[in-house]
Picture (cartoon, rainbow, N blue to C red):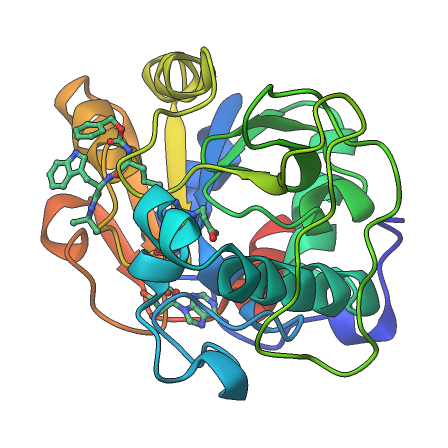
Length: 258
Ligand SMILES: CC(C)NC(=O)[C@H](Cc1c[nH]c2ccccc12)NC(=O)[C@H](CCCC/N=C(/NCCC(=O)O)S[C@H]1O[C@H](COP(=O)(O)OP(=O)(O)OC[C@H]2O[C@@H](n3cnc4c(N)ncnc43)[C@H](O)[C@@H]2O)[C@@H](O)[C@H]1O)NC(=O)OCc1ccccc1
């Protein structure tokens, strides 16, 4: 639910240029990454991977090669992330975006790299999960959706056999896009159209190194759209945007939407 919570009143100052761009905007597209969910407790991709997988490269865990080599290791990692996201709540940033979209007067569209469901749980409609959805399980061979509840260990384990497909008995995998994998049908195009059709693009909590998603801010700016980065740290995108706002998602967005 997107109702403002006491913590949602953010004391921080909104840079004038950002406030003016937001005030003038009628169509806003928000591109989010792992930093959007960091203040909810979801580890970022380049942040902590969670003790048991510290020694493994996320790009190996999140790849067909990693799955083929050791499905129990990869499934255990996703089972841990499913359990973790379920136990966490949307933060003030997620709620502010939902309030903005439901507040009327401005069209807010969200395209995310995040595979969690925190935008939706905050009351937002997500235009595109460009890197898939942690909870959309399917058979790794026949592709049949897996509707049953996967067993999620109370305590994370390093290896866990994936569930078996009810159709063909093969292993079930998470509905996320692995490195080298194709994006969901139409997801990138939907995000691109929303960027080209916007009068303001906010880039929130992404390091901007995973393609093709990372190409969106440049393309938007190349089409004359104002692009603002919200990130406490410098990124590969910072030099290519109109305004950088060195702040966190859960402090900046409530202040912007207030
Ligand atoms: C790494 C990179 C070099 N590699 C790629 O980009 C590859 C290969 C590639 C394709 N085209 C290219 C062109 C050039 C170079 C390489 C390529 N891309 C692909 O493979 C893509 C598929 C990529 C999708 C992979 N799946 C993910 N996720 C799902 C899985 C899972 O989650 O397990 S990517 C995953 O990592 C990415 C993590 O990045 P961020 O979200 O930015 O998070 P990160 O941790 O990096 O940074 C967090 C940021 O938040 C900030 N922050 C922290 N706290 C806060 C806070 N509180 N508030 C605000 N900000 C905060 C930090 O400062 C930081 O800046 C996300 O996209 C996330 O979804 N597929 C593909 O292109 O298919 C067609 C194709 C295929 C083959 C060959 C050619 C074309």
